[in-house]
Amino acid sequence: MPKAKKTPDFVLVSVTLTLLAIGIITVYSASAQWAEIRFDDAFFFAKRQLLFAGLGIFAMFLIMQVDYWNWSNWSKLLLLGCFILLVAVLIPGIGLVRGGARSWIGVGAFSIQPSEFTKLAMIAFLARYLAMNQKKITSFKKGLVPSLGVVMLAFGMIMLQPDLGTGAVLVATCVVMIYVAGARVSHFVWLGFIGLIGFVALIISAPYRIKRITSFLDPWSDPLGSGFQIIQSLYAIGPGGLLGLGLGQSRQKFGYLPEPQTDFIFAILTEELGFIGGSLVLLLFGLLLWRGIRIALGAPDLFGSLLSIGIIGMIAIQVMINIGVVTGLMPVTGITLPFLSYGGSSLTLMLMALGVLLNVSRYARY
Image (cartoon, rainbow, N blue to C red; front, side):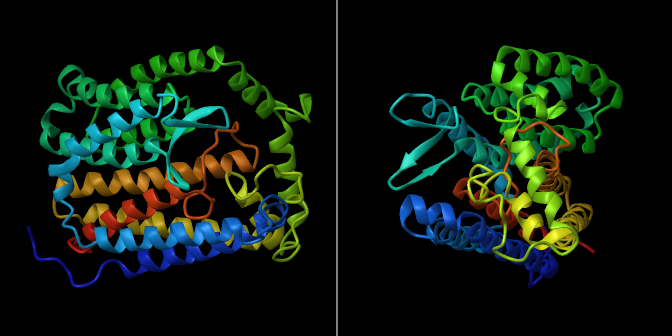
């Protein structure tokens, strides 16, 4: 391998820390009133988010020192460990149920979400497989089916929780990686039809998913039920206008928008900071995507390139889905906004993934 540069991508580090700072401030603003009532501590969620951010930053800089090709050697073991955790989370007494999904494992006062860490393990595993079998990827039977088979196994285990949002991000990220690796578009067309049929079947099989689709198409058909979150989110974004109501001045966080510090935090941010504040956040995510793509293009080998594409693709897909949901362009999925939404597993995973990307940047030629 070529000699590493002394420093990682400075722009990527700066953008990440800026997003984290905005996220911690917004989490406090969105949750202070509710946290004061429920926990008698207005800083309850902000302090925990700050703790998660600190642990995540430590992990990011630690992982940044690990040569990225080691992830190729560890990928099988890491994915196997994640599969074991995905099975364990389904066992009553081990897995915790929140929001109708058994997706968490309790660890003392905290909990982890194995499906989040499965995404990074799958990215590393798939990058290794695609790099070692690049010549086979154009073959449907020898290249595409084996790679997608492992992905769909992970998706199926996540759907047992069930967690369609995380599963969709996992599959979409892996599809991007497989496409970049050289898979034929014609194969994706046929698989797209099959996937669409399966997706419709998953929606039909669960009444609450049908309600999410109908509320997306017409939220006012059930304004106090399935359409409530979308309506309240739009009520937050609209009054924000160009400059917003001012930091801490959101009205929708006062019991109207449920748990605004999580999936719908962007709605509170735009209500308080307006179109300009929301656009600034989107600009920062755009810079993050740009630096990630540059790193992927400049990586010294195919594994590093695919690993980088998977990580930046995962972040971009989550951002698009979350913003789409908050603005009413997509059905509610329960996907967090990277670096901004409250949540330990998601935030830690994203920062760990960026640590891997930053290590690749130390070798990238650009």
